[in-house]
Length: 232
Image (cartoon, rainbow, N blue to C red; front, side, top):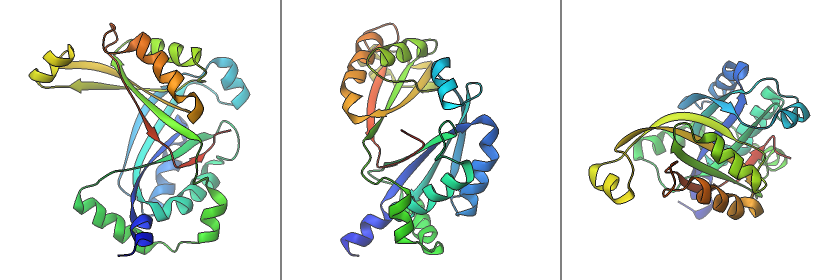
């Protein structure tokens, strides 16, 4: 397999953050493009009201859809989402893809078959998606109730807001003792997409206010973003 073919099949994780009422439109769009393996999580947007007004967003409920796709389908999928959700208009939602370092064999074979079923238009891909994104995604896990502190710290360093999800963190006894955290604890997960040049400052601000040595017991990490829609 050539290096070009390997790159075309390299897996990506797609994140779509849209209005709660658009959940079926997102899934039907992805299903029409054979992206049948996806998860949806309801969350809450944290952008300030004045920013919501600027963006034309009503309310703060958000639906986060996560799906897997081969890299070669990125442009095709992004173009479909742009048309279905009007993501080229401010306030309609955000879509980004994140490169994955590995994937189990059965899922990888499914992505190969998925790629073969779709007729790719290289010109359309180049025109519809920024493959050299200037954005990163920061992921923060903190104890339940500390998401506001994360968002406040991020805003103080230049971020505009994020999306808050609810979850539970599980760790084994040795890790719990080493890190000084509970073995099982309700968590707030905060996703923040922002320009790369702000990443270090925002992560530092969050770590100082909500890191592992604080009551929030936060874990902060960032992942690269290689395709974007709906971001200025």
